[in-house]
Every structure is written in structure tokens, then in C-alpha cells.
Image (cartoon, rainbow, N blue to C red; front, side, top):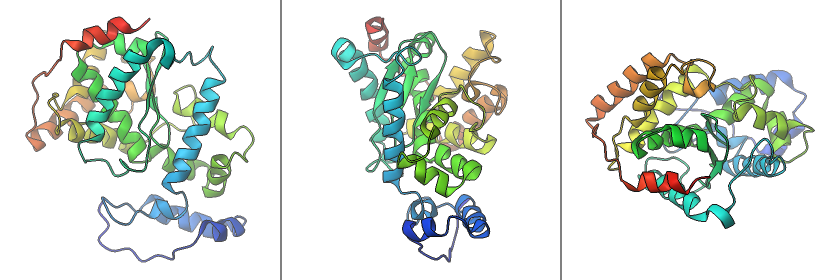
Length: 287
């Protein structure tokens, strides 16, 4: 939704904190916040939860991941530096398209989790996590780029932050970003990583992430509808149930393929494989 004009009060965070018990104010402000958006220029969400707060929360989530190697067995830079660098190179191509709102503010750093799981997730502030199971499942680099574009969009459009504000309120989220909310980081991580239910992205968020994936890839040599090929592969393998939310049912995979391909047709972007042979070499670097 494009907002032509917005009238607002520029309230500093300190003022919002002092008014944390004023329920009606917070509800009114959150309603304004979550129902206003801007493609460039003024961003209402920045008034109460700045991009630096996304980064702070994302850093805390990463520390929680590092503290739980059994659940999140990250590949180390020391042992698997070339593989991580390859994946980062893919990410950098999407960041360089100039299509991201927070390309300069966020740290779009990729990480690989060594587990046979079909999943990927993005933390606020740009850190992203890809499971080896997902990477090995995908035959072409274009398909993984489609998924990566989807995850970048979740971070860049700040979907998880908006969802948490809607669910828990501004004050709770600010406290979480400052490390003052007991158990908040663990709860946020469980939901973002797909092991919880409270922060499932809305239908609109998922559709928007799919759409932006096409937009990002349209500015690269890769097929811009790579995400749709991924969903088709899931369907042909009979894996459209019992997998993470972003992969399957919200909205229906068949509808997502149609919508992604429609966006590609609208943009008139390339839908033939780029498929660099180095992708197989990349997968061979994985454990």
C-alpha cells in the first residue's frame, strides 16, 4: 500500500517508554504503525523501532544460536570458509541490485546450519540461516537464489518485527532488543526458525516476500521465478505438508507458483536457467 500523505507526531523512544502503561496510546500508535508503509522516504516503523534495533535483536538471536550447537549446528568459518563465502557471494548479488530498502543499514550475513532440514530463516537486521538439507535438495543455484530472495525480503520488509509489534507491543520488543525481556530472545528465535507458532508470517507477508524475490532476481542473470521452481519441486516430491510454514501452506504452494510467475510476466524478466556449474562444487564443499 502506498501512502500518499501521512500526518504524525515524531515521538522519541524515551517518550514512548514513559507512556508504556497508556494502553490506548500504544494501540492507536501500533495501528498507525502497522497500517502505514512507504516505498522509499518516510518509514513510520523507524520512529519506535529503528533499524539499529533490528540489528541488536538479530545479534542477540545469533548469540542464542551459537549457544545451542546441538539444535543449531553452524558450520564454522575455519572449517567451511569457502562454502560460506560462496553462499555469501550469492547473497551479495541480490544486495547489489539496489532494490533493498535497508541495504546500507542491515548486515546481510549468511550462515549454514548442518542439518537435513528443508528450512531457511532470516533474523531482524539481515542475518540469514540456510540448512544443508535445503541446499542439497535444490538442484540449481537459481532455485536457492529464489529462496534467498524470499528470506532477504522478510528481513528488508521487516516482517518479523512488525509481527512481533502486533503480537506483543512496542515496549516488549524494545525491551527484547535491549536484552531486558527474560526469555524473549529464545521465544523470538523459536518462532523465526520455524519451531514456534506465534510469529507465523501473514499471508500478505509471504506473498510480498515471494514478489520481492522476483523483483530482486530480475536484476541478476538468474531466472527471476526461481522461488516458483522450488515450490514445484516440493509439490512433485510430495513434500507440501509437514514442512516449515514459509515452504508450503501459507498461502497454498500452487497459488504461490501462479503468483510468482505472474509477477515475472509483469516485470518481463528472464525465466530461463542461469545455473552456474559452480553450484555443484559448492554443494560438494558441504559436510
